[in-house]
Amino acid sequence: MNTCFFKSDKDLNCLAFHPTLDLLVSGSINGHLDIFKFDEIGGELVKESSNSTTHSSSVRISKFSPDGTEIMSASSDKTVSLTDFHSNKVKWTGKGHKNPVNCACYIKESILASGDDEGEIRIWDTRAKSSCIGKINEFSDCVTDLMVGRDSNELIATCADQIGCFDHRKFKLKALSDNTDHEFLAMTLVKKGKKVICGTSTGSICFFTYGFWGDLNDIIPVNKETVNGIVKVTEDLVCTCGDDGEIYVVQLFPNKVLGKLKDFKNLDVKVRSTDSLTINHNNTLLGFLANFEYVFLTSTDEANRLLSNDQPDFFDEI
Image (cartoon, rainbow, N blue to C red; front, side, top):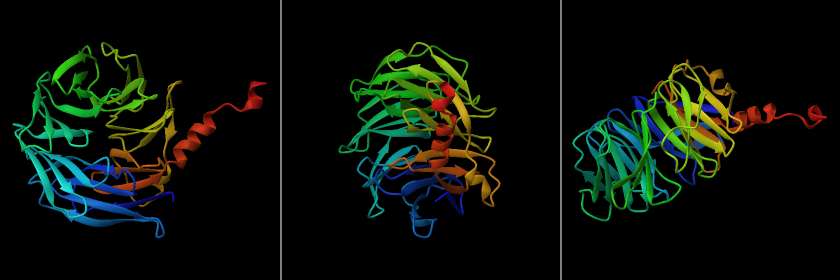
């Protein structure tokens, strides 16, 4: 399999793989959640089901639970929800955000975090009622990404030009970076949790050493537009997406942009933007949105080849 795509009949905002199966969930601008399946025999992407009852307006983020039985989603309707994957019915809805919810993540099985457009982070226990169990109000701008830290008691958040580390049990700030010259849009842990890398609105990747949040360590210019999504392929390799319509392959330590993926450009679609990059459970498939209307799948083989081709030959060193 090189690459395939599915054209949606509505604009899509987000995409994520199932933790054990080659299934994807997407969230759309009209509030729908769609499930897609990769048919390995036919080599095509097929829409399996759709849900229009979970949210009343644009879905900003949708993710499977770690065990794959639920779909967590957050929306501009100011709610965070859990939908049962098998029955397609809403199991729980968190209410209370005063502004559209932009991002969310699982902290552990029944504990969620969400961040809204005005900087508020809420912590939820889905076993409890629909109100949150705690709030964090250290930011005053849109929370762009959330993830659990290397220490499972820590929550990492990006907002505008800063990254913060929080104790999600005490709802308190542990450390906050200085203001930078970069607006952070997405992040991921690399190098076995030793580094956090952030994609920016200026087309760069910024590096932070975990636990030393004061200032960034390094910057890699990737493109002239944005880096709005990053996925780790290996500890030495990440891929990025952005507004220039490309998927870039970036080597880590030494830091180097190795090139762009080309296989998906061979299909009859003019790709103007790429977004919501995601990787499957065994790191063999990349999924992403193109032009906010196509769901693309492509193999990670091309990215791995770029890394292999960049390695010096043994005999070149003699």
